[in-house]
Amino acid sequence: MSEVGDAGPVLEVVDLVKHFPAGGRITGRGSAVHAVDGVSFELERGEILGLVGESGSGKTTVANCVLRLTEPTSGTIRLRGTDITHLSRRQMRPRRRELHMVFQDPYSSLNPRMTVGDIVGEPVRLHRLARGRALDARVAETLDAVGLRPELRYRYPHELSGGQRQRVGLARSLILNPSVLVADEPVSALDVSVQASILNLLRDLQRTMGFSCLFITHDLATVEFLCDRVAVMYLGEIVELAPRAELFRSPQHPYTQALLSAAVVPDPAVQRERRQVVLDGDVPSPLAPPSGCRFHTRCPLHEQSAPASDEETPVLREFAPGHLVACHLVGPGRPAPRLVEDAAAIVEAG
Image (cartoon, rainbow, N blue to C red):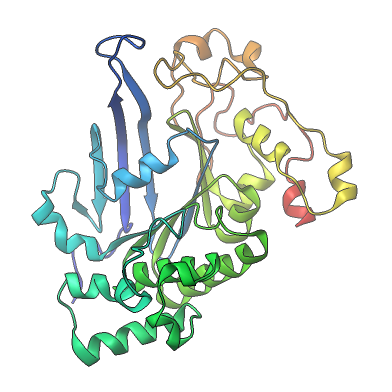
């Protein structure tokens, strides 16, 4: 039987805003951290959407709001067509079967007092979906799906390696067959030698199980390998959203171009020849974000867009089919000046 919203996106986020109160002697009474300001995107069925940006850009706050771990200040979150933005804890409980998260640190996110089998089976017990032999069989099947040996179900998290712990986290998140998996930098705390195996596993599981995934990272090479589309965040806003290949081939926003120019490519010869865009200054404080375009204080093309960029906030507009950009210099069929000619070298060399 089909359910409400089966024909549309599995997840819709519209004008999401999250401000954290920050009143005090230093910041002043009534001040707030503008962590997320007007973020909108859709997550299609079976899609992996990458959310990238510098630390502090608001990526994790978006994830926490989507999962209702943090209450948004305003905006709308729809899961399979149903508005879940203001559901109570009790109303949200059945929806939690469809929304799960893989955390960044695979050790602190696991209960050290529980065995692997208990950790993985806990969501099933909480939702009263199985018990006894049926629960044991479900846990064994899920552990096998993430590449863990059956005997590891009796171990504790401290007895496992980092890669094994992250596989346990994956198994716990996927045992209920969620519609949406949110992965918050799931490999950044792991050794480089294990990162590729976890990414390959995640991609294989996504293709087999068909869940949608919001993948949060700052690693552009990971995005290029794993994601279908990419949303680039800067200081609480999405500045560019496009299919992966299109974004790497033709980045439009100056910030996106700067990010791509800073990415290290695996070919040393290519890397030596590349020119990196060095941005002036630091990221402005989210306590007092700049007026107009938030990137204008660091933008190498600021003189070409002033005074509009200083006063008017750019909105996401379609530059090409499926390619949205928030920049005063970019319009339909009107690309931004190219800061570097080799921005796509990360794809070609990879």
